[in-house]
Image 1 (tube, protein in one colour):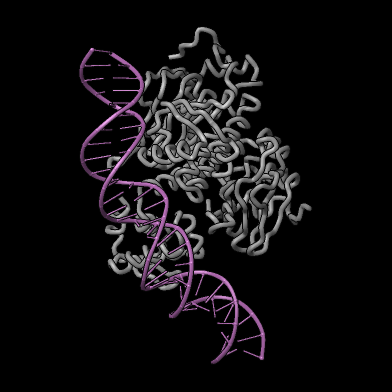
Image 2 (cartoon, helix red, strand yellow):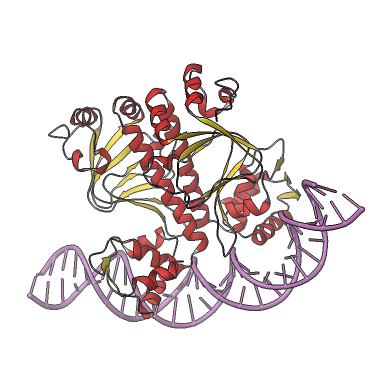
Length: 223
Length: 223
DNA sequence: CGCCTATTTGAGCGTCGTCAATCCAGGTGG
DNA sequence: CCACCTGGATTGACGACGCTCAAATAGGCG
C-alpha cells in the first residue's frame, strides 16, 4: 500500500531526511509503506507485537501508557520527523506504550527487515536513527529529573517556558489533561498550579493562550 | 593510551560484541581506547561536554542526576555490555547525568568520529547500538510507568521480583540507598516498604540477602 | 443553539518526604 | 582475631504536597 504519488513525496521537508539523497529517498519510499491516521485513531496498543517502526511525516501523535484504574500516562508528544518503534529490532517484542493520532497524521512504516536494509544502504540513516533515539532517551531522563526534583508548579513553569513563543505569547498545543499527564500530574493539580502562576502575576492564561509577563521570575521558579 | 595486550582482549565475552568478527574487533580496539576506573571514580559529571561514548566491559557503574538540595536520582545501573553516551552524536552536547563506577571498572571509549566509522565499517554495530539505546529507552519508560501507577511498596516488590534468583534466594546488588533512588523513593520510604513486605510474610531480609516466601502474592501486589 | 466534554473549583485525606535519633554492619587497624 | 569506628540503615514523629471524589462552569464541536 505504497500511496506516494512521487517517490520522495514530502520527505525532503522532514528534518529526519535532511541531507539524504533523492535516490535513497526514492528507494526508501519504494520499500516502505505510508499510512494515514484520522484524529483519535490508534496506531498500536500496548501489548501488541511490534512489526514495524515508524517515522511521523505530518500531524501530531502521542505515546502513552493506558491504565484501567486511573488516567493514562502520556510518555511523549510526537511531531513530524520523529521516529519511534526502533524496538522492532528486539525479537518478539511487544509495545509497552500505545500510539494515538492527535491530529490527522501521515507516517512511513518500516519492517525490521526494511530497517536493516535502510541502515546498510543509506549513509547517515543509522546515525539519524541513533540521534533520534538518544534524544528521546534524554527527554525521558529530563522527565524523570523533573518528577524527582520539582514541584507541580515548577514543572508547569518549566513546560510553559519550553513552548515556542511569538513575542510574549505562547500556547498549549494539546489538551491540558494531556499536558498534565505528560508532566506526571492530575488535571486538577495542573489547573491549580497554573492558577498559582497567574495569581503571582507571572503569566496570564485564556484557554490555550498564554501571555508571559515575567520570564525571569518564571525561570527563577524552575530552579 | 591503548592498553590492550591483545587486540580483541576480552571483548568476545561481552554480549554487545557477540557475533562481530575478530577482524572488526581488532580494528575497533585499535581506534578506541580503554580506561580503568577505581571504585567511586567519576567518569563524567553532569554539564560537562560529551566527547566520547562508552561501552562497559567489566564492573558496575551508575548513571545519576546529582542535586545540591536533596539526594541524587539514580537513572540506571550499568553492567558489562551496556553502551552509553550515544548523545556524542548530537553536536555540542553536554552530559545530563553523571557516571560513576560502583566497582572497579574497565570500559572502551569511542569518539564521535570513531563511532561514525565503526557504524560504517562494522556490520551489525549500528543495529546493536540502536537495540541497546532502544532498550534503555524502554527501561526509562518502565520507570515512568512505575512512578505513575504504583505505590512505594509495589515498586519495591517489583524490584525484588526482577532480581536474579537461586532457588528462593535473591540479593540487593547495590546499596539500598541507591536502589531506593532508582525507584524514585527516599531511603526511609524504601526501608518502610520493605518492612511491610516482610511483616506481611512475603519475604524476609537480612542485610542484602532476600528470601522470597510467596512469589505469587508478591506478583499480585505489583498489579 | 445545544449537548458533551474539558476544565475549574472546593473539601478532605493519604502517602510519602523531612528531620532527627538510634541501630547495625562491614571494613580497618591494632 | 577482635574491637573500634564510620557510614549506611532503620525507626519515630510530623507535616505538606498532590490525589481523590464531587460539583459547578466553560468551551468546543456538531
